[in-house]
Length: 427
Image 1 (cartoon, rainbow, N blue to C red):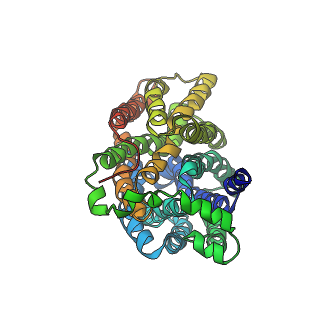
Image 2: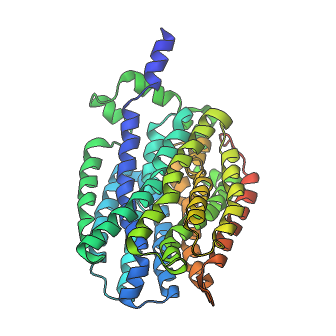
């Protein structure tokens, strides 16, 4: 009888509906930001911008996004994640619509700045919601699935928006149309999401068995962790090592995501539609590897470090080689994009499961907000620095030094990861 009850609790339930909905909402978030990055080489031509200006346009978003993490964590813990996410959706949907009206470098910078502030208030509250709803034994897979937005959006967005731009004759109308998913996301949030399981239990959407299963295995229920304060947690060296790990991982992810369309357009001379298809390859593979990483954490290692080290160490030689693939070898390029996509994305689920495994849910919003702020500085610096590393050679534009920078970040991330401690934090 006990086995039957346990199986029913561990089966599909409303907590999974919550995670799937958060996934959909974050795909909408990514649709807006990835669209800008996809069109960067064409925006650069239309607005007559330099590589350095485009690097700044790409980076300023992440500066604002990083700063927003602090307030997002504080607001999510104080007022509940659902309210914060709703405000974020309204702001970034409005800014996305206005992006289609950008006429010069200054306007584009301000739009990117405010888009970062708006979208930056969705990630931490989403993690906070997962912390409130998902048992410890499922966090790796839950965060891996949620983090799959990092792959599925970059995989499908370039194909969709480049096709729309080709049909409409310009990149500008695409941003007007992207306001529609934002409106749908707001309605979905209102109907499906709640901050705590108690609300859905009272509304009969959550069974008592599932509620008991969730509450019995949250990190905050593990005795000593309930008394841990934020003031004590900031003394944990592993907290800052995790922040540096994020810095390196996000520098690779967002540096490459920002510049990949320009890399294919300039170094390989690809057109709009082909770019949309080729860009999707590493992210389609990454969609698989992110969930493989989460499963390895939950089912094999029961820790985050081994998965993170496999990802970071394995990425180093691949990133170096990526920048040296000669023009005229599309098969070699596609294979390398796929293999590199597998290794660089393997870490994405487990990196965000780490704080939920180590710190109590009552402060996890502040913890994630603080450390993601540090981590997102990698996403800010990387695209900006890449703009200075792109070079012109007798053979054409080369991105070899850009990918060498990404490989260096991967090596540094592996070193930092090796010193991180795991297990529930005890002061």
